[in-house]
Length: 202
Image (cartoon, rainbow, N blue to C red):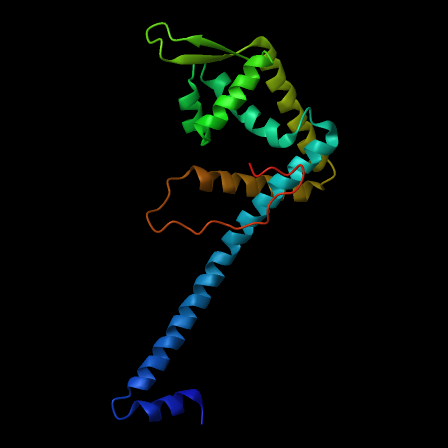
């Protein structure tokens, strides 16, 4: 006797047990279909995390000018200062998605290093405006050049067909990220093992 027959016998004339079993089977099928549908997206997300870590490792091996776990957040902020001259610490934190306290510490370090200047707002003395210095612009360009070199070294050994596939895939991903999100429940975050030395989380 199979499971459905045993359940049918236990459910009595109403067939309640059979309906429960059928419902469980349908739920299991739905779960399997959902897992199959989300597996490719999860794999893409996992690969992006691994790609970021591999990039940071290569950057360290190439001779990064300082600890990557400190350099990457600082360079992100310098890019924002370059794009928004006169930005405040609070605005930087919101744009970069970083705590204001962390932004304050990094910008204070940048000021000491001569990469950024601070000046009070001309009309509101409560606001402190940030501007990139010539030295800061040079440091930013040096960092960008180092990143380009890491990518070029990684891509130069790829055959044309694979390089074309990488380019096409990146364009598809870029379009997906730029489109407006569809309404619905938020996806579950991708869990990954903590980064090791030279593998910052951001």
